[in-house]
Length: 346
Image 1 (tube, rainbow, N blue to C red):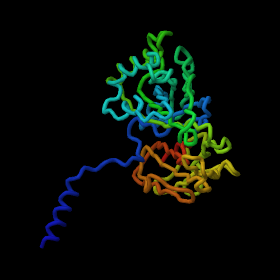
Image 2 (tube, rainbow, N blue to C red; image 1 turned 90 degrees about the vertical axis):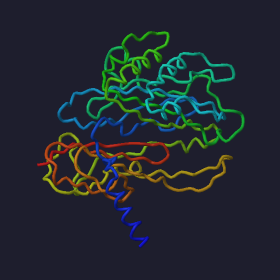
Image 3 (tube, rainbow, N blue to C red; image 1 turned 180 degrees about the horizontal axis):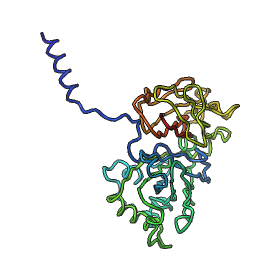
Image 4 (cartoon, one colour; image 1 turned 45 degrees about the vertical axis):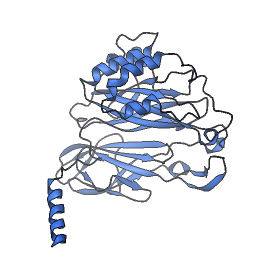
């Protein structure tokens, strides 16, 4: 009797539970992935930041512009205190705290703190369709998406960070706005503060989303030959046939197995690397594990993630019209790459 009562309660609870859309379905503005090239920095290096932005209205408004503002926090090696970027990313409305963040971005280093700003402007991207890059013109073109190790950054003479490195947190604020709107009124004294103020003002008015990316600054005592590289994926294979990279591929409504298309040779194979402990001693040597995340603007995907050698199944029997498919590959060490293809379902 008690078991039957518990079963009935469980069924009633399941019936009342809300149904959530799968994470693989693109129904609004999404920053699906962010790539840093290179994915691991030298202690005095820099990386180019590129976002993958997907929108459900890609076919009806193909020229719609999304602007991505990158604000980054570089921690003090050996200091366990969280950076402002970690605090901002945990807020329900992170843009509401950008006023303080803007002041910190323009303030000189505090006594006992780093000589670099607590929050730095790491550049602005203009995204049209699936292509994101530096703004093509205007003041925003002078702020390319670039994450640089700040001047004065140094590792302590001892400690695990000299082997394991430290992680920079990049906050990517994607906004339904043009780059010109984000740099309106920008000055030379504190461009980061001016951009942050414009972002905070527009955040409440426009469609938006916040994403984070962590980028490793490699420690000086880690083997330089083990610096990570981004993985590679050159396309998407549907039903055994590579999808056209230049034009939309026409498909008949139904189902298809999806698999990543990889480059030939070492570029399409996981890297071999050695895991180290905090003292620099080797733990084990082996290949990376590449994990693939799948996305679609219509239809249903069986799996959100697949691994090397596995395929996903995309069901689109009830779909008609244009669909955008995307696959993101991550090496679980900070490296990222992706491919996006368009299809038309008849």
